[in-house]
Image (cartoon, rainbow, N blue to C red; front, side, top):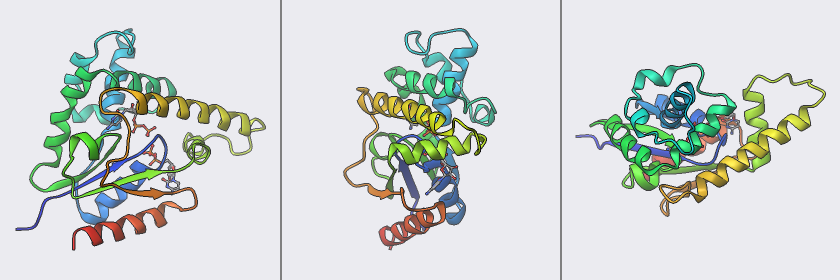
Length: 213
Ligand code: CDP
Ligand code: CDP
């Protein structure tokens, strides 16, 4: 019988976790789950219901999020970035979302990316990767991803604003008491400032090959 392969990809905002995790899943023929979307869909539902994602209890909304919600096209906007991080700090929300993430890996395994995959959701994951880069690099990546005008005269200011938002969200994610963003002791860190997405994939595949030999 082949061993179940669970690959945890964690790290701060816009580090390239999703890009890597999706490509790893394809290369290894495993299902892929972007767990941030669970928190984003919960935050989105709170906003749509006119509720404050920081103070109003969000667990019933989290409980009603299904995999079909994750393809909503309105989950990657700045107000949902913030709402996701706020609902993610509610312990009851995290409790509700544990099972759906663990079940996703099923018998055959999966690649999952998020903040607490290697620490809380799959502490026994086969391979744990921690993907990171400086806040400036990550802000530039997120800014480009948002299809901003590359010739905008206020490009530098726009990137600085994205950087501020990313730094604030990382600080909130790292300092919350339940499942904070942190690197698992047995994770392998990949610093991606000077690597493109192909180089990060190649490095991750080398690590997977080494750890599954
Ligand atoms: O999932 P996460 O927020 O960590 O980041 P992402 O959405 O996967 O990646 C952010 C952007 O960085 C995407 O446009 C990627 O193409 C780009 N990128 C990358 O993922 N890896 C690199 N080494 C360089 C750029
Ligand atoms: O793509 P990006 O890294 O900007 O964000 P994301 O991965 O979609 O996650 C959005 C927010 O959800 C994060 O800022 C975290 O607060 C929360 N999250 C979490 O707490 N635990 C996870 N496993 C995934 C996301």
